[in-house]
Image 1 (cartoon, rainbow, N blue to C red):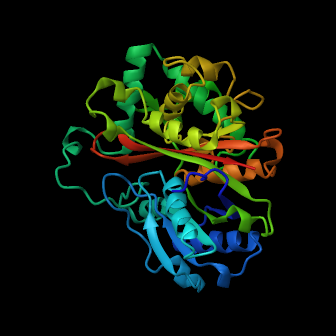
Image 2: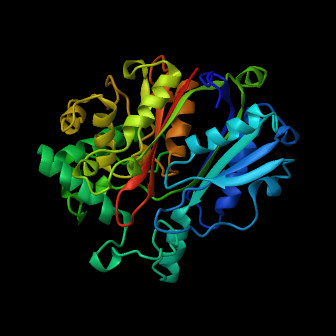
Image 3: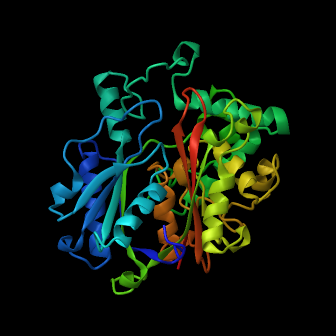
Length: 400
């Protein structure tokens, strides 16, 4: 990628669909989000030269997906189409891929769209008593050894990171609860959030059932239906579109593969270091320059780890940092202002992307962060060993 990556590419259009109606396919949601994004940019379908399908697939196998490709359903004259994604890390991988096609002049505008239908699938499964998991049907990998030892769900192999953090740093369950409560406060200002109108106290968190120690039910993310799409183009071209562009300032990637996975440090840290260094280096920014953060929050522990790993607080102090109100509405480090995966909706890192665009456009209503000009969006997921850690971490910095 060229050295002047900062500000060279921009999001020109944005579309988002939330749904809790059984019978609407994920592909239909994806098509509608893409249609909205193209219209938001003031473009026509004939303008779209490329399409990328952002797929949030579980690390332990492949998700059952919808037949047919969304650009064909829409009649887009795409010169290329492919799928990309790893666990919940979608948008940074998609932007990097789309950017190269734009640089080469293969397309003027690329639409990137992702969708999930986990909620309706789970509801249908309950009705039919088939017992399908909320994460979708999984095909077990060869060599998978965890299931006989109790690794039946993602919470099974995320919980031991939280318990290790408790052992090393003295973290308590109430600290994880403080994260859940803070994000629920944000969700109460987001009418589209699944937990809108359902406030939570720390007592609610502590009294909710423990599913896999130390995680309570309220430490765990939502199961959702919905879709998010964006139109990416060169920054100069975006200035001629209908909406004020949101510029890509920096992108970075980290992998737990970079270290021996069995090192105990890896159970209290995420692979933030290189992702942060790359993204902030490209953007020419420091952490203090970030106005709002959308941190991947499949479980409360991931938020705590990132607050510490990015440097908003010292390692082991994430719980106290959140308890002090820094990340809550009115705090100095607004985090997951939609309610996040925990209280709003779970579209992988497209949840954070959507909220970043809404905040930077100044369209967040009651939850709007004043004078928000920069936003950090992180991605997370994609096990290299299952049961084991989610390996990939992505850092995306957007600005206006």
